[in-house]
Image 1 (tube, rainbow, N blue to C red):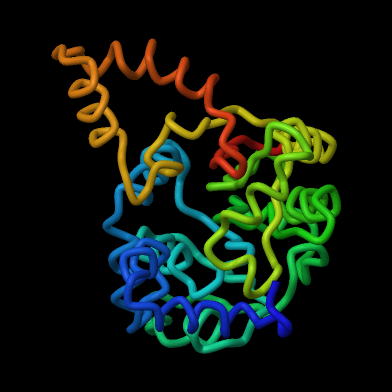
Image 2 (spheres, rainbow, N blue to C red; image 1 turned 45 degrees about the horizontal axis):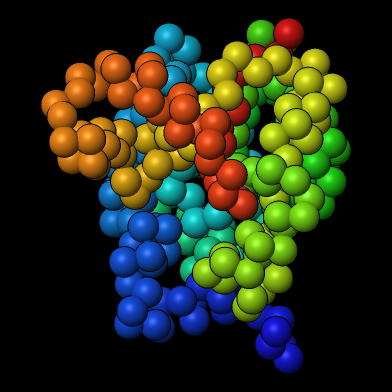
Length: 271
């Protein structure tokens, strides 16, 4: 462990300075300029999967909780949503300073420098509440989910993507030890799948889809299901149809996957 715990901004700047980590920097969209990074996210397989998931939901007001440097806020705005980006960090590297750099007049992203556990909005304000890799950073997961539900309209939707999941509490240290930046800034965490689902359910929100690690490009990015299909076919030495891989092989792989910190996505609505 380091003597000095860095800020999130300092940790990302350290990562940027490591020549062997540049692929990871781009995969995490930490590269500059922020607008080009955001545009690359908008064209990514991850965002295309989000678009498919939301395809039947008309554009309205969306709260992007823990917006970071604004890549998702940018993508929602590009798709016609009225976006509020909530991010407590004011940094030009990882926070609202970066969002302001991408916030062109035609995007009209509203920025709030607050935390998700105490939202500065009236009840039933938003049509969609979204968070990318944010629930596992919550100081108090139940309180965070309660606030998300409070500001969501009745019948509104929620989408929490790329959340780190543990099989059991004992796996937390393994996850933290393997995380690229936790040793620098001490800000990572993860919960059991049942803890996420219980925290969501207790608010009156209902999960309609729980996407396991291999079930969506949302979780697989910077890889994709197409790349995964290719690797499976090569390993099997047989031209298996994608439908068979998706409906038979991937569910088995998801069931066997006990990697500490594997990614899940939760999608549903407020009853």
